[in-house]
Amino acid sequence: MTIYCLGSINADHSYKVARLPSAGETLAAEELITGLGGKGANQSVAAARAGAQVVHLGAVGADGGWAVARLAQFGVHVSGVAEVDTPTGHAVITVAPDGENAIVIFPGANRRQDPARIAAVLGDAGPGDTLLIQNETSHQEEAARLGAARGLRVVYSAAPFDVAAVRAVLPHVSLLVLNAVEAAQLGAALGDVAVPETVVTEGKGGARWRTGDDELYQPAFPVRAVDTTGAGDCFIGSLAAALDAGAGRADALRFAAAAAALQVTRPGTADAMPGRAEIDAFLA
Ligand code: ATP
Image (tube, rainbow, N blue to C red; front, top):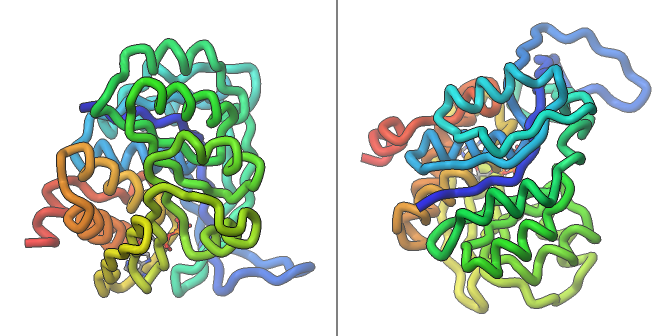
């Protein structure tokens, strides 16, 4: 089936620094790598590299042609990506030697999604297909509502955390994916709100799939991490691809953890996503 991803497309400027700067401090970076990023693009690339058919819904500025071309090179269908008169989104990422990062994002064109285009693209979708959404675009609620109405599996990565967005989108969601920080923010903001199936990722601590009172735990695979930027996106895109291919929850979690473990062993975000053969070999 098809995974539709309404998601951000960013130019990632990743600066290698000796340590993350503190408030008021100026640090010289040792290296700069520029590449394709944005939670949406990362998740689309992760899912496509993991073997899924992926249609990306997004927006870039006149300066974003290279990013769309890069998405297409990774095998993502890009006819749902519009060009708008706002600059392409970008991220300034600082990465410390232990792989920890701090990030500032300029959303730009990502906030300029067109509901008519979303409705037109999702008009081809139906039961068995998946909709992936995050909080770096506009119009997530419309997309989620439409996706749920059309019978899609709606997978929502509530990142960056935004209470208003989560409140609006949650009623239409089949699977909510959060990291540990976002899970705590969700608990604090919404209390014991009825959440559907939830996957909580805990970095090196692994991931938990919660369905009601049941919990499936998947440890992280021990690897030497050099850059954990995009690990969560890799995990989500690969998880969606595994579920789309018919995997059960435990197998999908294991596949996603393996993909993310491979992804953290190299620098970059979208460019670091592992392919299906590499993930299968890692698990063999
Ligand atoms: P990011 O914001 O850095 O993209 P995140 O905070 O959304 O990531 P994490 O919980 O850090 O997401 O990581 C997602 C998954 O990736 C984890 O559940 C784990 O399986 C894998 N992972 C992350 N960091 C590591 C690591 N250092 N070694 C092995 N696996 C890792």
